[in-house]
Length: 532
Image (cartoon, rainbow, N blue to C red; front, side, top):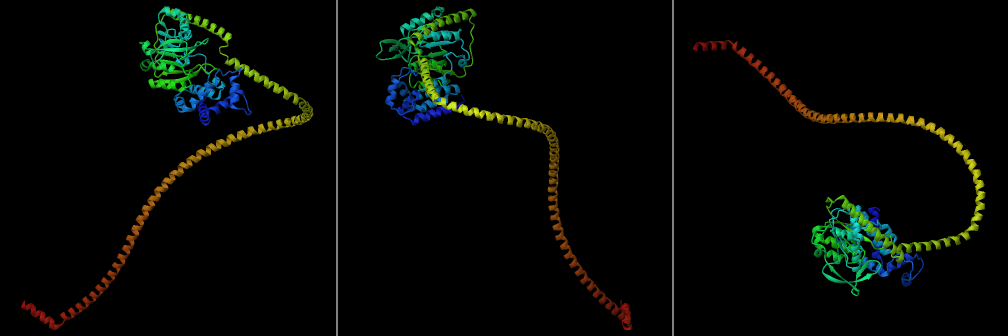
């Protein structure tokens, strides 16, 4: 499922929960569960649900009411966890498991279901090696045996099982490994302190829950007090005590950053409070969710993957030891599986799938009966339609013959058109070549035009400069013309003056000559020279 699809599912769920009351959601969920489309009261639906013999949901109404109420009150917290999930598969599990509770529909669980390989799927962990494994809620030792199959070179295993009967069964199934020396079964419950807890056992399932009125009491302690050495993998399936146990393992979580597989389905708010609590202790984790059963609301596991934990420390265990560990683990798992299968058949321990199949068969029978009734009513109509269809077939055959003839003519025409198409293709190729040539020519012309435009721009600038010079020269020429006219006038006046002076000079010369030729003057001059 894509990220957008997951987001749409979550947003749809958010709007639905916020826009309806708890009773409205329960009412609509029950109507959907019983496939009822007529008017009915909530009280009638509740009574019908309580008396239902084939109830594949496997939970009472309080389970759904409590979960829906917590969703309405704390949806912002759910949304924070959803947005913190970086993996789309985890978002798919998270949103579909919430939808299963809100809409009371296990089809959402099937959509969220990943695989039955719970806790140690190598697609999650990549590789497990040299682990110090802590199993909180060991029961029969089956989970520890499964761990050994996935990590046969383990360093140490600590199994916590507080119930005496289950603890003895666990020791018996792990006897070979205990004798080997690196497996310890501890008759304690994981908690946040040293305390005696009262339990109420659900016989036949191996499950148990804290109950003040319970008849069974056990000792509980914290992992930080119980185990001093560093741990690398912690699994918890302890019937609602997971948060208390996490608080009791704060030192290991903060310092060791172990891999973690924590069940998050026991309490109504485990879905958001457990990841929130873990990240508050150590934020250096990536969180993913997986659903390991397709038909029940249990077996939802939160996996906490330490960041920057790609380094795998490989050990030098002997091959024969690895072989013996795997062989013994598989043998005991086979025995446990056989016992559980027998118990399943005897007690119908996990009846959801069978009940669902019964409900589907009943619905199918009702559907078939409805079809049979409709068929009886439709049979005569179909007979009449058959006669009409037969007449139509004769007409259609005639039409078919005509169309076959037309089709033959069309095929010939298509053949002729294909020949024309070949010629057109050749002509098109020639045109394409011409087009390519013209495009090349056009590109050259564009370059030439650009060059001419550059020259024109330079010429324009030069012309402007010449125009400025021309204007200046015209001013100078006009000034020179004025100067020439003035000079001509001055020359004319000077020439006139010279002419007048020449006339005066001629007159004076004439007077002078006349005077010098005067006899009296000559005598005076002569006398003057004598005096000198």
